[in-house]
Image (cartoon, rainbow, N blue to C red; front, side, top):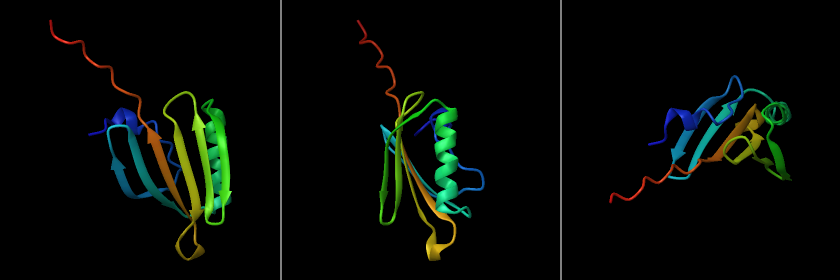
Length: 108
């Protein structure tokens, strides 16, 4: 189970609604939908990352969307933004790596 503290590390654009959520030992993945255009969502995430002191290490556009990869001040994040179903709004996929928990010392 992922703690609410780790979920707070995932930036969610206002007006977004989750459609799926998965978590593992090292990653959290959520898919959101938003009525905003893909360009508006990209601008919101770029601005948010700059405000948080995150460095965008990759900004890749593909035929079906754009993926931003960021690092620093929290978990690594991959945000992929695609046009929404039927060309309305956008779909936002966020994958975050979670920091490792400290390993307790071996009992002696």
